[in-house]
Image: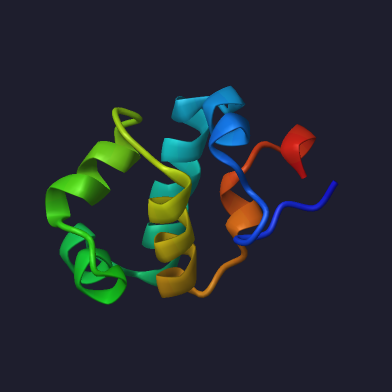
Amino acid sequence: MSISPTNISDNQASLMSQGDIAARVKAAREAVGYSIEDLAVTCGLANIEISDIESGRDFTPAKLKRIAGALQVPLSDFLPTDMQ
């Protein structure tokens, strides 16, 4: 199954490892050369929201979609391969 920003659900997100997602979001941000502040401005989230996502404390499908769009990567880059 292909995961896209339009078909990820809250149930699917709850099954994902928060640590895996956190590491993938951070790696994608760093690959683009963005600081947390840069990403926050670009995607419209607060710095603390980005920090919480990258530490695995909090994420929602909506926030992941915004981050993926800001980094110009597919949402599937953040998801474990068994979810794709």
